[in-house]
Length: 340
Image 1 (tube, rainbow, N blue to C red):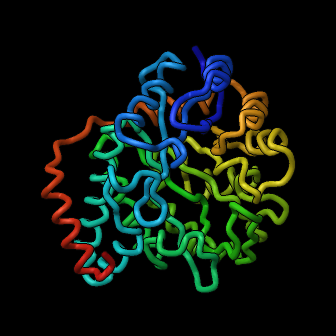
Image 2: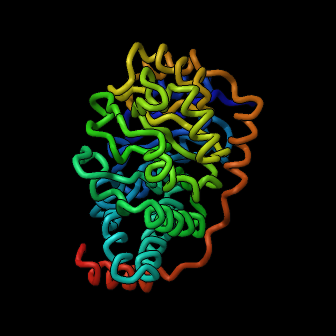
């Protein structure tokens, strides 16, 4: 049975009857979990199984934002705390090899936590390059301010996830680092020249163009499209994301319900699809909005379907891991960076 081109959140610790009916009728491609969906390991495992059963497929992707630092849907007492991205950047400055090792180890351990629960996709790594004066929404989530360093650490994070059997989602393409507002609440506009964006922001994403999935930025780049944020800009998606950066994988929007986007949920969804995104991401638990998204998204077909299939086919079986030894090594490295 074919899927529709959207990923949906749900409201609680288990599916409600209306949600179950909605999923059966509308067939989202995947699901995304948040803290409201997390209680205990047994509960999350049961919920993930229920989500897949509701679609009737064991391969339905289940996503989560588990970066470490302040963006972590899983946490104590059942799951360990992981360092923010800036910790790897600090260690990289002292010793690049150790910085990359720590980034890979952290992602590998996160992947082990996720696979235990049946979660197969992590919205990580970031390749955003912050600048002085930018909004703190990225902040210490970023790996640094030099594009080559950011790309190298993002690659190490990707390797750790892949070794653990978890698919990465590169974000926030083509870059959220310069934004002076939090796109959860308002639309940021970046007035930097195209040449400078090519040299910095876009340059961090280019070495990662082979990743299977990426998430857009709800950011206006006035030098490229003064009217539309990247998520709804056909110009930016075709000329920059697919062109300059060269990303050819599955492109999903950031959350369609974020306040950076204008119009109704239905209008936003149409704009995302028309701009060239393969997948619409809807994160909140409002069933009426979920229905609007479903009505406006097409059946997965053509190149979007090919990209979705290729992304899922790229997931590897987890490699063996000594968690205790890996955690001890990671802690020692983070202590060395002074960012425990």
